[in-house]
Length: 305
Length: 254
Length: 68
Image 1 (cartoon, one colour):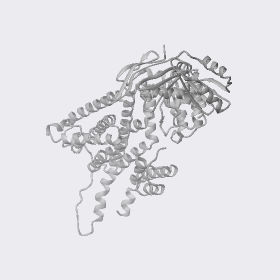
Image 2 (cartoon, rainbow over the protein chains, first blue to last red):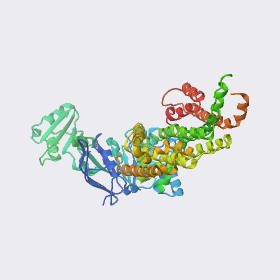
Image 3 (cartoon, each protein chain N blue to C red):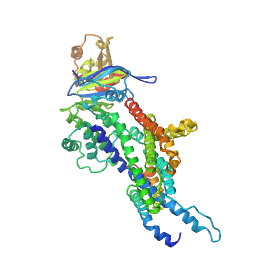
Image 4 (spheres, each protein chain N blue to C red):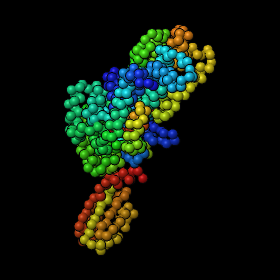
């Protein structure tokens, strides 16, 4: 059973239907990347999980407990980092974590120990200034610290990296990766390289539903193109290969640019051997012969078309 | 309960750190001191300004004048300032999004509203107590012989009206998004109370009678019992408004 | 107001003066130490806080004070 289960979730804002029967299942101890364009419903989904928004229909279960809109007990399992976390500017980071500890009902000593651990983890240990003077990245890091304070089973981060510079992004991703052993992480983003860097599972949200879902390897496997990229010594050889009559087949599409030829196979039982045979016949040795790997970007573009 | 206490502590800390506590206490303290002083000194100053030859007989100032000042200032300037200072009680947290994190940490929404009301009530009570205490001490010193009637009860009425107004404010804050909307709605509620007073029969039960009738109270021209209805209704409405604020806030989309 | 009167009421006025000063100085320190205001500039707020008793500091703290 997953730590988070979403069943047939529908949500409409006025005329605009954001979620149309979303189904999702997040297994324990995974880093789950929720990808989608701006306005795809990522934040809406998260707010529903947190009981901040009321779904029109459907249900969400966290750790086996159903989420109730408004006052929900399930939040005690969850740590949440909003896209732009805002704190009380007149407090210091330690004072804020102390308040969070009091609210979640942690003991004072426990709060103190956890605060020090987390401030160390997020690199704010020696920060004595008030939060009001923090930079965006520092707020984001404090946001992660507060989200992890009560050792949640599920950590939800809404676009934790979107507003940060490359260094800030790397820091945040490293912190999330470090948290993986202890908790399940669900984070939304539209930066695909972040997903490739740390996620083991991915879901692409498009048109109010999941357009793509599974482990990163699975998704890539499922969407593997039957195709190859061949690189030749020079343009002439590439042209000879590309124009050979064996390749003038309805289920083969060939594109050449310079000395590189890309061949795509659709709906036939031909495979790599066929091209190897063609090459052997023509007595051509390519410099490279590579099976086409789908990138996350190409997959994403494919599903959101 | 732990959430309520933690959040209440945070609220008080916030008012102290944002200087709102300081402003409230200083203003009410200044009123407390100036009320009897103005009552005492104004006739004497005016009297000394008048040139020789013309004699204006100024009525001698009494403790009654000091308390008139007290009730005038506390109900008008005092309450207006209080309401303005508290008008951002929810809107600032909602618009900035500071509350969302705490709510997702399991802080109950009921605790938020109740802690906010408690905090406002505590500050209002402290302010009015300070103002009353100072006016009392000064009046006692400046007008040792004078006695006014029904003083504790009229101050209680003023305090209760403040509590009623804060409940209105809280409900307005839950209903509207901005602090201006909150102020507007609270103002509208006061105007509504004043309009209701046009109906003579409603006067006895109108919360606003708590602050419009107190001069009669300290002069002893109005019987204490005539305000019992208004006390009861104000208390009931305050309770109702706070409960409504809780119920509506629990179902609010954030 | 003659001198005798002033002398008589001075002890009563002192707390009032202390309050005004305390508020004014708190506001002045804040104006100088937090140079970010919601509107206006430092000179303007110093003048308002120092010369307008009670009301000046209140206006500063409620309207003029920037975010921490």
